[in-house]
Amino acid sequence: MQHTNSEAQGAPLGGRWMQLVIGVICMSMIANLQYGWTLFVNPIDEKYHWGRAAIQVAFTIFVVTETWLVPVEGWFVDKFGPRIVVVVGGILCALAWVINSFADSLALLYIGAAVGGVGAGAVYGTCVGNALKWFPDRRGLAAGLTAAGFGAGSAVTVVPIANMIQTSGFQQTFLVFGLGQGLIVFALAWFLKEADPALLPKGKSNVSQSRRNYTPQETLKSPVFWVMYLMFVMVAAGGLMATAQLGPIAKDFHLDGAPVSIMGLTLPALTFALTIDRVLNGVTRPFFGWVSDHIGRENTMFVAFAIEAVGILALNQWGHNPVAFVVLTGLVFFAWGEIYSLFPSCCADSFGSKFATTNAGLLYTAKGTASLVVPFANVIVASSGSWQTVFFFAAAVNAIAAFMALFVLKPMRARQIAEDTVQPVSGKLVTEGAD
Image 1 (spheres, rainbow, N blue to C red):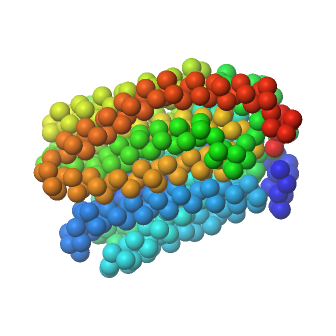
Image 2 (cartoon, rainbow, N blue to C red; image 1 turned 180 degrees about the vertical axis):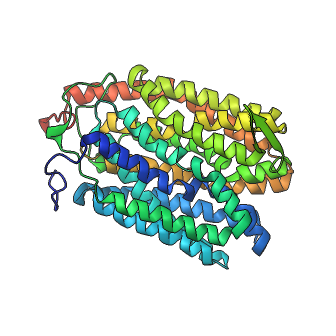
């Protein structure tokens, strides 16, 4: 691939593993834009009385702009390299929370959400795509570690953010953390480099991979892509509802301030749950990514999605107990977060490395589609007075996706990869890593 800059020239400082570390840190710095949001919902409502449903529209706007523009940002990465895209992303992420700190109307809050979504998407899509390109031999693990930064990155700041909201108010918290997180991303972005095929290992992966590099247009024409997209939407919808609604769920269960003691540590139930959830939501990504490198993407999806369905049903049944609430939300997040390593890896396996950033970005828009159902959770709860319908829906779609992984996606991918091997387009085969 030809670039207009020289990012692909020469080995990067610290090699490909340093590129992975930089990506993980950058992802950690943007994690609070999504995972810290639930801490701000009730304080914003208490100050302005806009209603939780109206405030949560900002979360949906953030997720939609974060995901649906990733293919565009991926195109910029494929053309100009990862560095400049992440630099701009860091600036936008800082600006977003600065806007939130001054937002005295829903319109301004929504603008901040949109700016943050564009910035976070630029950082997220670039870092995941860079990992997929630098590690064709360990795609699940590399994508998982990178995504873990986004899943667990907010764990160390949950308590500081919660405490600062209590002592200084949510507006000052938005301002301080927004500027700090954006500055770190901006600084690290200058060390990112495009993957150089000459520096990549020549060994083959343990999982089935296409020998053909699909263009984004070809990817969108593939039935395999749309099956993955549907599964991504189904599983992401349940997890996003838990992510955005955990604070309101805890409040409605009368658990938000209930003390919970586990292994000698005592914290309010919501703070405890958020901390554990962030850690497990991060650990699951490299763990299941690593597992999928050995037993296959679809087999791993079946196991994870089935655990998620059971965990959500258990949360509905026993979640009113403070300790059970903390433990079961941890299980739910552990079985959900792996979609952000399994689906990008499966996408690159199916459609090749050359356009991995753009193609994975196209698939990542499924998260934005899934986010559209998040506000409806508040509507359902307001009309029924219970979270039970929401929990049953989330459990059902996870169970369906689990069976689709084995009985629909797996055979379809096997046929496509076999056809790519014997019937290459334009009579040309392109091996993995041939950028």
